[in-house]
Image 1: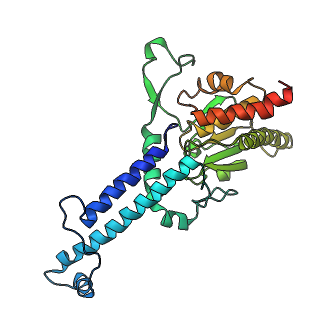
Image 2: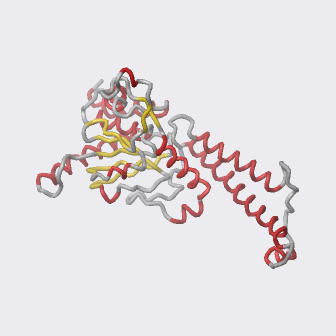
Image 3: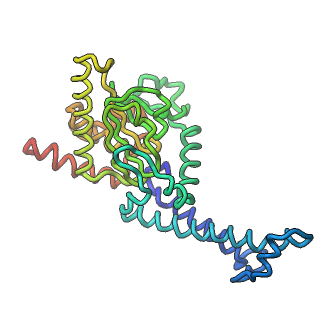
Amino acid sequence: MGAVHGVYLKYVGLSAISFCGYHMMVGNIGPMDPLPLALSTDRIMLATSSGGGSESSMMPLLRLGTATVLGYSALLNGAIAVMFKLRRGMSLVGKDRKEGTIPLWSYVVFFPFHIPTYAYTYIHTKYGTMKAHPKAPQAKPENKAKKVTVPVASEVQPGWWVGGCYANQLNKNWAGVVDLTVEFPERCRSNTLRYLCLPTWDGVPCSPEQLENAATFCIEAREEWNRLKKKGAVVGEPHILIHCAHGRGRSTTVMCAALVKMGMFASYEEALEKGIQPGRPCCKLNSMMRTNLAEWQRNYIDGKKGI
């Protein structure tokens, strides 16, 4: 949910908070009286009838409903935290990999996951800040410590953009979009010529095979745009968007591979330090991302050079 390291801990926290709330509702902890394990038919009838005692009779039902929601939230977010660690279950949310849509049933069934994820991402996107990169042209000595709002997407190299799930706010037409989110629908789908969805949990990188697939996709999307441009079907230069939820980790991993695959940089480390971070200083790689990039480079770049 927005950090490159230890993202699963946020779902552990959601699970723990929900679990505490559940126990408060059933009366195991806190000042509330224990909630009966079963509500009698008489009490349910009283709760739904009019009269002086109806409000007080309704309270056990409200507490029972709240306890059920909190208990379900504790189980669901706990299970998702486990799946984060195991790097499994990324199809659980039901995202359509062709169109990038999330079905209604997913929002209904998994609302304890969707609601806090959407809320956190919206706030983080609106108010998230970063320091200017010391080697960036805009980084003046007197403003080195000054923080700026993180853009919804940043053009780190001409035609190459790293961003988050609100990159649609740029209102650009894309030659290709690589979408790495499990948790969000693709908002740029109608403005992109080619679309690739590789859903991964927040903080979990693409596999080396997926990195190669994504890097190749980006190159082919640019080539297709240029072919169509010669025919007059599109105008302007090809722009590629690689995005995750916040444009910090997952998207950075794929962008490193794409820039190296294009021949713009010799290694993923160089692509990160010289090609991406000057344009978007908040971009970082965790240990899993570096491991997968190193394996990808060894198998698909250095191996072909005979290194």
